[in-house]
Length: 88
Image (tube, rainbow, N blue to C red):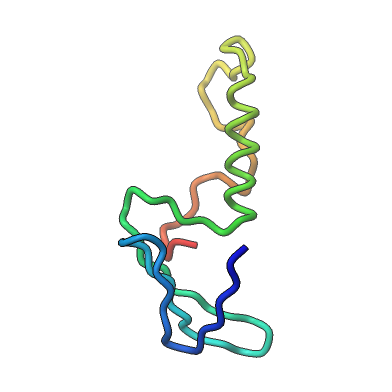
């Protein structure tokens, strides 16, 4: 793991088109601003892990296991569609 020190308003580049900027530091919390192309997914790790779990579970579902109405009853509540807001 590469560990870098940055101060507020300083940026780290990943490749040519991903920028991570230190937006704010308050106590033990750091706010990051991330600029990335739209084809590069950006998620908090816990959201990424949940997506991966759901994808693995979905890959193991047989068509006959799906509800007849095509509803989302089997989708984890944390992954249901939420109001649009900032990307996390």
